[in-house]
Amino acid sequence: MTSSPISERIASVSERIQAACRRAGRSPADVQLVAVTKTLPSETIHAALEAGLKVFGENYIQEARAKIEEIGPSASWHFIGHLQTNKAKYAVKLFDLIHSVDSLKLARELDKRAESINRRIPILIQVNISEEESKSGVDKAYTADLAAQACELPNLEVRGLMTMPPFFDQPEKARPYFKALREVQESIGSPLTELSMGMSGDFEVAIEEGATIIRVGTAIFGPRA
Ligand SMILES: *Cc1c(COP(=O)(O)O)cnc(C)c1O
Image 1 (cartoon, rainbow, N blue to C red):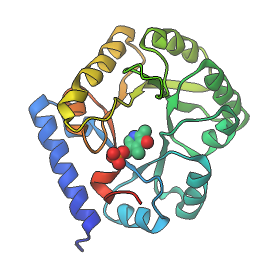
Image 2 (image 1 turned 90 degrees about the vertical axis):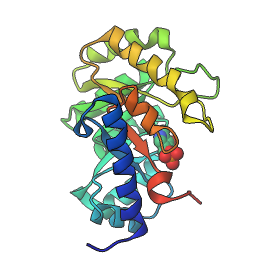
Image 3 (image 1 turned 135 degrees about the vertical axis):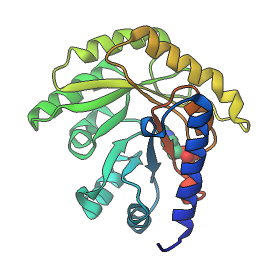
């Protein structure tokens, strides 16, 4: 096997995932790694595919569209950025999971657009667990309502919740936010099985608190330009 900085970094991230799972008594098979490729060129994604990664996260529709067309169906794509309603028609075509549904209006538009291409589109509801003004996501208190209403939409498959805690230098400080998201999930129950939480700086803590999907960019690809 050839050794590139990317494959070395992936190996190191995998070891850290396994160690966090061991500490939490969880199976690494229950934690999906989404490699976040916003701003990175297609060549980097090709290298990551060669190194064994299959699932990529993108934040911007236009940027993602060009890369997805270029790379083709060998990869799976998740949308993790803020989604404007007028981009829903592209999102349902391009992505296998949309992490960032944060309003009923957006959910309805995704449902309508998914129907028009005969697709049932898996989604997560983004929760603004820290209640910062600057952050996207629904309030904790409104999450159960939105989940229930989205579950009524026949062309959406509501799979779980996503959050982005505030940025901290010390990952331990993010723990209460991850725990709070898990408590929201547990209070709602079925069909919310996925918890998308944890990034390069704090994915181990997120795994200890129950993350089933982690979104990791910098730890795999190095700092973005
Ligand atoms: C950029 C981004 C990430 C990855 O961040 P890193 O710190 O580079 O791992 C994860 N989730 C979302 C929503 C992002 O925008």
